[in-house]
Every structure is written in structure tokens, then in C-alpha cells.
Image 1: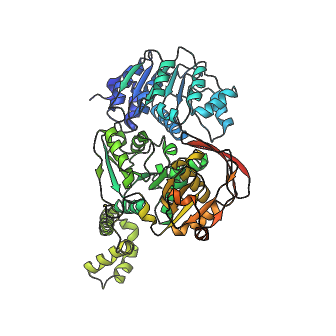
Image 2: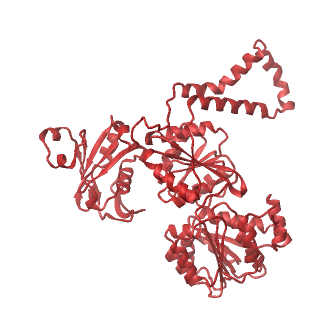
Image 3: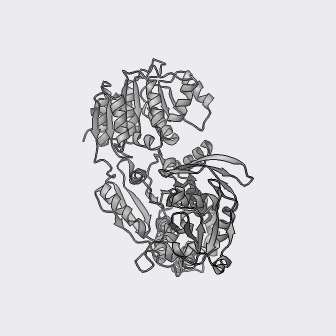
Length: 586
């Protein structure tokens, strides 16, 4: 195994890395750094998240930059603000014992005038998100004509987020003779196109197999009913009292809702999603990095660039639509060679996704059982006893209070004292988990379709269907947006040609009624009706007076300009006051 000293780095850089606690380079660092230090070739590096790619390009970049020149010599592009800030922080840390550079982070959500001021002061290295950089270019506030090195970090994710045109525009302002270094976890066709258009005979390096996972991550899944996902999540958290983890949800609405539920239930949690302001995001991330938060609930996009040490667990409350996202999510743990656990909560109809992940990982995912109430109580009690055993006693300051304490407890035996002390914390869990049901889906609780969950619930008819360009995911988003119900609140969606059915629990009926009051879609009124009969399409076509008696109808609110294609659509929506605002859905 090589050391950083043998890779050709200057002593100052080696010292900075060693002060951070790193003695030996990761495989991507060991193989990439000697090539990039030459500075004479384009470069493509394929490696999974968490393998040390920032140091792999950051250390050679700092070696090659001339600190005496105030011209911008290097541009690092990242898909998200969080990743951009993390890269900037890492570069500043790496150079602390080496040279003095002006490294400027350029990203949306912060003062653009302040960023312009820092750039004009002379930034040798700019770390930017594509959108904000385009803004500065259009304002003629930044020049890329002196760029010698361009680094595209997480290139696949930038393209997934729709930055293809922005990348083309940005690269068109850079000199042809520059060197381009591209780092990516995967190599889709779009990334290959960038290589073809903007790179010349690049040195290609692959560390590990494409789409394979980090070998230090233990991949597990639990099989539960959809309705039981949140209770199962709580049990997993309670069974791991020292957890420091990330929970992933599919939508920002689910993310906020789950975080609020966890906080209400007494967990030290918060959320990270696209609706937060930059100030809110920074505050949440500072708390998480400082471990003032134990659990962070996030969306896939918001979590890009989270590089926090010692995350013990990544929990997938909702499985991602793209399996590559599973690898990115899981890569938040087991960083820098450490161990980590990835747990997916899946219902029976999602088992196919587990098989797909296993194919990508080229390894089986281990099924784990949701802990029983008794197992949680035992684990919590042992954790409490461990804390008691390991606590540091401040002998000097507690001494004056002990005589009174001893006098108060004098009539209790050692065994009685231990039992009472343990019960202070234990009773809370014992009360909650007394007679707790088995949450594992064992094949005896329905077929996993969700229909058994709503056997005593309410079924709705809606006059929108496949002929309107809708898919199940669109219908789920419509219900989510207008009613505030999350996926866990919505049962089976049965999409027909000109109409559809969906199911919710009885206590959610009023939300559906209020939410769809006053909705129009493409110029016609949306009709949502309660029906207690799971009728076929032929039965629906002929409506009897008796059925009319059993239904309630509502409609009217505008839902116009709906255009559905490839899981995304544009629409116009109204807030509670009737004000119109444009939104894009993806």
C-alpha cells in the first residue's frame, strides 16, 4: 500500500492530509493523483460516492495552481450547493499547510453581489454550481478565458438534474487548450457525449465495477406493509439508540412530514429538501455535522454533497425510482474506509427493486426482521446501562451534593436502586411497546397490493385517467399536492381510460373533499366522488339512482394547461387565496 508521500505531492500537502487523520490513500487517490499531477492530459475517473474523489482531484489541482497569479486558473463544477461548499472547504483545508489560495464558492441562494466581489478580488479557483455560474457569465462578472483546468465532479448527477445545456454553455467560454477532469459514479450515454465533445484522448480510470456498491456497506431490507413503514422506522431507530443517520424520502412533502412526525415523537431529527432557504439549509447542515442532530430526513437532490463523517445508517423509507440513486444514497455512509449499514423499507410489491439492486451490487441484500417490542426494550435498557458504566464522574463538583443523595436513598438496597434507576427510562419504552404487533410482512397479512389496508377505508372515483396523459405517479402527485396526503396515506390507485379510482383511510376523507373542491383540468371540471363499491368499468358506465345516493360530488378549482410526458408536467396551481403560480413537476 502506497502512502501520500510516495504519490509525488509536496510536503505541505502531505502534512495537511496527515493532520486530517489520513495516512494511506484510497484506491482512486492512489491511481489518479500521479496522473493528474502531470497536468498534461484530460482525465476520466469512475468511482463510487465516498471513495475520496475530492482529494483525488483536489490535491493535484492545488499543486498545479500558481498562487502568485490572481487569474482564475481552475473551475470545479458541482451539481449542488452542499457539494460545492464541501469541495471548497476541503480545498481550503488541504492547502492550509501548503500555499495561500483564494478559493471562491459560487452557488445559488446566497448573495450574488458578495460572490462577485470575491471573484473580482482574484480567485485562483472557483467552485460553482452551473446555474449561478451562468448567471455570473451573463452579467459579465466573471471571465473563464484564463481557465487551465476544469473539473466536473458528479458529472452523472449534473446531467440527471438537467444541467446539460448549462454545461455546454459554460464549457464554450473556456479555452480549448484547457485540461478537463471528469469524475462520475456511473457512465451513462450523456457523460460519454461530454467526453467526445470536450475531451481529447482522456486517461480513463475505473476503480471498482460500475454501479457496484461500497464493500464496507452492509445492505439490508425489511419487508413491511406500506402502512407500517413509519412504525417500522421508529422501531429501527429505537433499536439503534446510538444511530447517526440519514433517512431518504422520495418527495419534499414526505420529507417534511416524516421529519415533523419524528420530532413530535421525541426524536432529534430535522429535514433537508428543496423548499428550504439557503440559510435554513446551512443551519440544518451545521447542526447535523456537529451532531446536534441525530437524524436527518432528506430528498435525493438535497442530500447530494453531504459529506459528513461517521454516518452509521442510511435508511430508505421510500425506494428511489432510479436504482443508481440507491447507490448514491447508500454512499453517504461507510466513507473513508469505515463500515456502514443501508436499510431499505419495502412493501411486497417493491421486492422486484431489491432484486434489481442485488444485480447492480452483484451481491445479495440481507433481509432483516423488524425488531419486536421486547427486543427494542432490551436494547434500550442495555444502552442505558452502558451509558451509566461509561459516564465520567466529576468527583470535585458532585462531592458536596452526595451526602444528601446518599441520605435520600439510604433505605434502598443495591438491587432495588438499580431496578428503580433503570425503570426511569425503561418504563417509557415498556409502556409504548407493550403488546406491540409484529410489523414484518410474512405473507399472512395480504398480498402487498395495499388493498387489505383499506378494507375498512374509503374508495374514490375521479374523472381523470390514461386518456388525460396521466400515469400512476402523476395521480399520486396530484392527490399529494391538493390534499396534503403522503404516499403512506394513499392506497391502491386503479388507473382506467377516462377515469380512475384511489383509496384512502376513512379519517382522511375530509382532506380529499376539501382538497379537490374547485379543481379544473384542461378546461373541464374535475369530479371526485366517494364510492363504497369496487365496481368494474362496465358497472361504472351505468349509474343507478341508488349509486347516486351513495356518492358525494365536488369540483371546480382550476387545474389547467396540464401536459404530461416522461413523468414530468407543467401546470398552473392556485393557493388558498386563489393566486396563480407556475410550478414544474418532475
